[in-house]
Length: 252
Length: 126
Ligand SMILES: Nc1nc2c(ncn2[C@@H]2O[C@H](COP(=O)(O)OP(=O)(O)O)[C@@H](O)[C@H]2O)c(=O)[nH]1
Ligand SMILES: [Mg+2]
Ligand SMILES: [Zn+2]
Image (cartoon, rainbow over all chains, first blue to last red; front, top):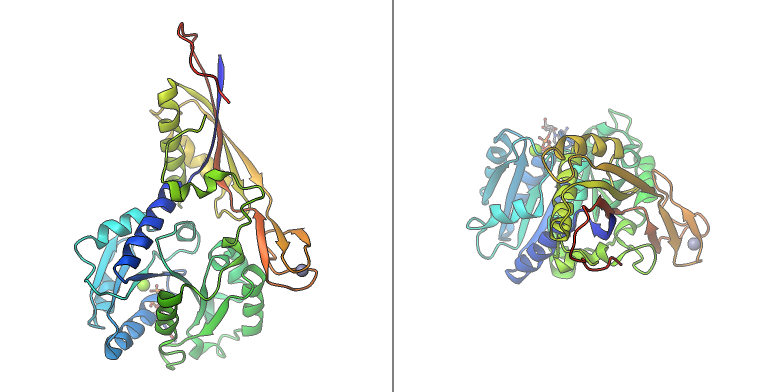
């Protein structure tokens, strides 16, 4: 006898449920997560080091967790800011998942931390699919990566609350067409804020910290179209299974 | 490549769903993958073939239905195929009050297997 089980279950339901729980647990402790995504070399670590240092100088309790495939170099750089930093080696896994992140925070995340910055694995494809329980998702692209980056990685840019152009100090040298870049972000994520930063020229100092604090207090200022799904059409109830956390249950 | 993680999640979820039903060998799993889900179906098929070994899905066929991305403007009511890369501002009025109707699905639709005839009746499928 042939049997068909109508499962209608979101594949990432387990991660979404973990992320949801983590976001609520952290919110209860006054902590908001900022998830930083970019290709390798876009300048995540450099920007973070600057913003963490600024936070410490301003008396804002922050911490950072950096994920890397293999080396601990980024943690060493970030620790120069003298805020609590933790390195996570993913052992080849191309992205962080909410459950992993939660496990790494247990017993480490200092009480009273207002912002936890997470430097995700350098990759614009895989990490985009995994909610880490963040309140603010930031996608970075340096001026050397081309204006069409948002079109090549529409899921990553489309799900960002904030887009940062990094290394603006060398924009002219590489003929970066900022208007075109902005138009491409607008196409996949209309209304998303795009800001310029440079750790060399000092441009945009504090913008990441400011936006993160604002999101912690009032939620992200921008809701991307890609996350604004219309739930009454085409969407099975299982798409919200994240809130049920009922992985593996069938509804037959 | 997170398709391996996705494949493992699919297998995990299918196994926990069909085990209580008494399935020993799943013959087919059908997935719905939106154009904007960020998953490459070919890479997923490749990962699935590796990951299914030794599970109840060892002989299972993976069928993926691509779901086109569609968007609707809250301002003027227009709907359009968003395409890839997607155009998510309204091509009619330029508005940004847009909803994504479909295209982000990453869902196990259904699972098929063959039961050996059993004497005791199992409960009816929906
Ligand atoms: N000119 C310039 N170079 C930068 C800037 N930020 C980072 N870099 C350089 O870009 C390289 C990669 O930066 P890193 O922070 O390690 O990138 P990550 O892989 O995204 O963490 C390093 O050599 C940095 O010195 C910047 O604002 N301007
Ligand atoms: Mg880095
Ligand atoms: Zn419109």
